[in-house]
Image (cartoon, rainbow, N blue to C red; front, side, top):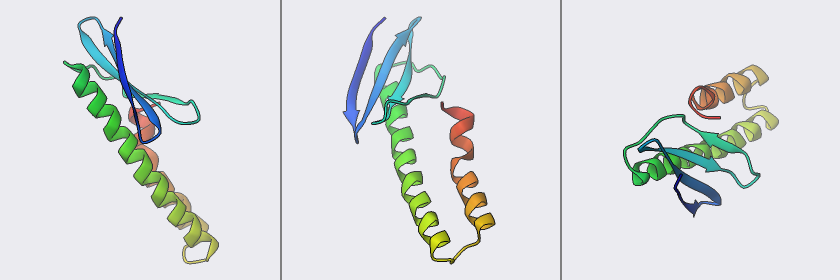
Length: 97
């Protein structure tokens, strides 16, 4: 098994060889491991997929902070807050983790 990786935006993004293909893994700063369970032809493709996940996760985190602020400032209801958070993260938990 070969592993290639790099530090990207505070996350370790890895490409791991598996039976002639590559899979991707993301390790967040707290140590949680995320994968998309897909196989890629090259290590570079796997690393790029992992970087895309990190970029999406960082954007979603930033948006969730905005939603939290809006809830605290009573600009949105708790139901709107919850539904918005669920829409931000719904596809993440179907593909990764």
